[in-house]
Image 1 (tube, rainbow, N blue to C red):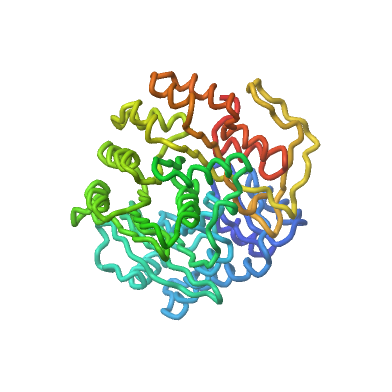
Image 2 (cartoon, rainbow, N blue to C red):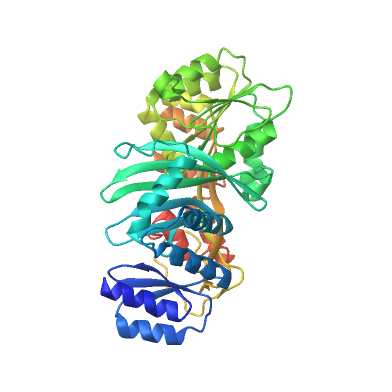
Length: 459
């Protein structure tokens, strides 16, 4: 405790912030690249590694003011509102997708998920945890007396020209209630396939599949890989007055004019399978299913794709070929897969190197044998006031498998995943890893980021 207090005091004297302390490292924020006196003092206090984030001076001032407010044992209602406003405003300004409020034994931790990675903010005293939790519960119309069960709610927030809806989730934990706020930013940016950043060949295959009168188009990847944006970009192209487009989602994440959007309500019996059966009696031309989670939903989706409907959905798999294996596990026969599937897209989001501080690396990197073309030029970014740790924003990597011709025959014959992938690559399919290394060679992202998202590149 004394060590932590000393670290905080040292950072404060140098107009910096202590963000996080782990067993092996300290993380600080400062507005200056030339912080050697601060680093020297921190090294005298602790032998741990020191990681530095460069923050704009204004952001540091806002957090210093917030921490000063929270330093009191009792924070007034007005001060608490100011403190929360600083946290919410900071999250919006930094393009965060989530805010984590985490009660601990020694401090109240706040972390922002920025470009897919959690970034610690200055910790607050434990004394403010109950007040912040109660305030957020009131804003989200939750029961402030209920602390034993999880709750979900929502509230709207306006910051200048930004209009944001926060989805609130509470969870009882060891030292209190943890809250996670999901930012649902209301933007007027149009969704379209061109804006996804797909390479020319992959984009052409996507456009071509969307012109099919029937069939199944699947977008795969882990949670947070941009599948929903890709789905709605496709629906933007398909959304025409002569088509009846119906969606089943959990929840409806993007309100969209021209679509008939239905949200699951499991407690009322509105599951994917229940809604899909009802939806098929609504004379649909195009059906969008938020996610295929079970065998029954998969069977209904495939049946709809075979009976004159274009069906779009998502699935959690690692690759395009892995999607075929997953659908087999959901008891979909191979001959039905071959006749119904049109296109499978696997995608991931990787952080982009900051354009303000990236540079070519002078140190050559040894590559293990991968059997693919590996870039010899590498880029790195040290971090600056514009970014977090050398990264700013994200871009998508795609792997697109068009299911046609010889692939349909091989799927029906029960060919192995390895054989299917080999044939697909012979026909021009680029894997996620290959597209990732192409992005590394162009200086869009780094090999380290590629390995963080895809796993070790020598697998």
